[in-house]
Each structure stands twice: as C-alpha cells, then as structure tokens.
Length: 101
Image (cartoon, rainbow, N blue to C red; front, side, top):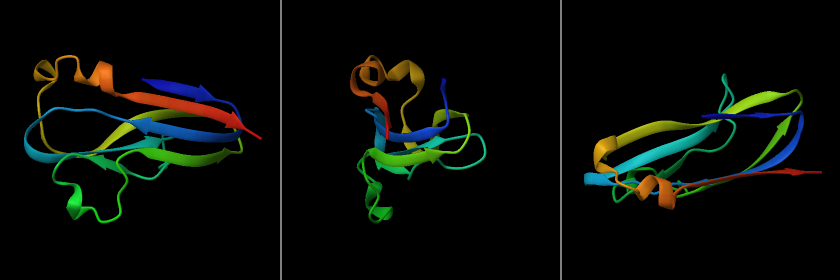
C-alpha cells in the first residue's frame, strides 16, 4: 500500500514484527518511487551483519512537491511465508507519518 503526501516536512516512523523460519533478517524502508525516503531498518536475529542499523525507522523528510510513499521491503533472509505469519504482522507493525513545520 502507499500514501500520498503533499509538499512539506514530515516525521516518518515505522516498526515491524515478522516471523522467521530460522535466524534471519528483514530490512525495510520508506521509498518515494525513485529514491529512499528514509534510512533502512532491520529486524531479526541475524542483523549484526548490518552494523549500526536501527530496528525501526525514525526519519525526517522534506518534500518539495507532492509524493507517494510506500513502506518497501529492502532485503530478507529466512522470513516465513505469508501463510505462516498468522496475526504477527497485523498485531506488531505500525506506521506513523506526522506533518511538522
């Protein structure tokens, strides 16, 4: 899914909960269709290979024109199938976008 934002300044936050089949990772980011609109965050047991990566997104974004943002998967390893996720994603994921300024 995506969200259409007008020009302006925004605080982007996102966190995810996901099921893994083995030790792995799940990387995610906000994307505006042509560029990363936030840093890349990683969750999972095997995130030590991504030194300094946060487990959630908290990022400032300044848009000079209207844009469509998506929360996009960046990279994954050993993530369970959608059928095996149960209610984890719906109960443990959040996205918040606040217009500031």
